[in-house]
Structures are given as C-alpha cells and as structure tokens.
Length: 51
Image (cartoon, rainbow, N blue to C red):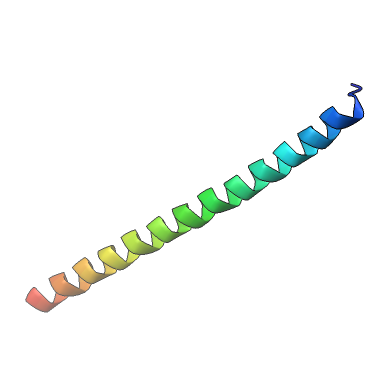
C-alpha cells in the first residue's frame, strides 16, 4: 500500500504514540497488580496473626 510521504510520517508518528500509550497502560497495570498483591499479603499476614 502506497501513501504520500506526509501520510507515512503521520502513520509512523501515530504508531509511536500507540507504543508509548501501551507502555503507560502496562506500567499502570503493573502498579495496580503490585498494590493488589501487597494488599493480599497484608491481609494474609493479618489473618495469620489473629489465628
């Protein structure tokens, strides 16, 4: 598929933006997973203390 030069540049720019956004999404998901894991560990350790 052939694009005029400006379109190709625009496509590359948009692809780079998508990559950046995907990285942000992954970072956010990792952060949320970390928080959930910490919460779970905390609950587990609290449970162990009360048993």
